[in-house]
Amino acid sequence: MNKRKGTLYWSAIAITLLTLSLNRVAHAVTVYSPLVQKGEVEVEYQLDVNRDGNPAVNKSSKHQIEIAYGVTDNWKSAINAVYLDPATSGFAYDRLKWENIYQLFEQGERWLDAGLYFEYQIPDAKKNAPDVAEVKVLLQKAFASRNEIPSMKHTLNLTLKKELGALATQATALSYAWQSKWKYTEEIRPGFEAYGSMGPVGNLNSLKQQSHLLGPVLYGEVAHQFEYQLGYLFGLTQGSVNGLFKLVIELKF
View 1: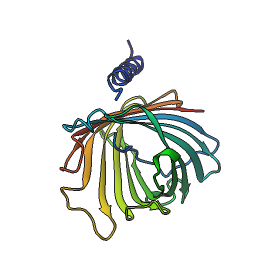
View 2: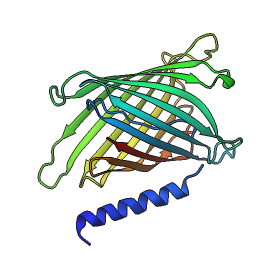
View 3: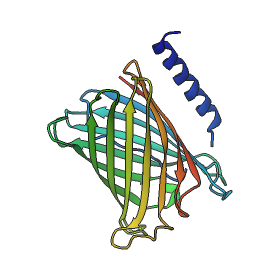
């Protein structure tokens, strides 16, 4: 078996095993790139599964199905349907999200690639919950390979989240997401991700109450059409779940 066939084989095995083992998240874990590809259609499924000592949280999961389209050279828009499978009740539709990414500069034009992200969430009417708006700053830096060091890419998202309308109960919240990955082959790109939810702007929660997650993630792309991510994030504070599995499968056209 040659190297390329070997990496494809083990990538397929890893994805299959993880999909079978994860059938049961408090929140989605996603890092967004500021880069946009005009005319590209993306169909994505994401699964996040909690592991925790609390039976009400353990094995709870979030499922997201997204369709995105590169409308112009610098604008991508997506519709995302969210389903929850809580540990204490059954699988059910939760909310619809409209996501938009606006790329600020041409790729490589500045030292950092940058973009803005806007999201609007409409919850299921039966939940009697407020609409939610999110704004993110997307920053990304890529480094070419040198000597024995493979190429790498680092991405940072800074997020402000605000509940809207008469049902709103929480102040504007601050959070972050970080991703680093190294490219050994197209199919195998190891890396890690970190996520943090700090609480209301101007009155952040204590460190113990904040949620911070960190862990390894494996990325890959096959035939420039199929992408996957799989990983496990560890909770770092008392306000975090003990652990969280992550699986993303995406097709591009």
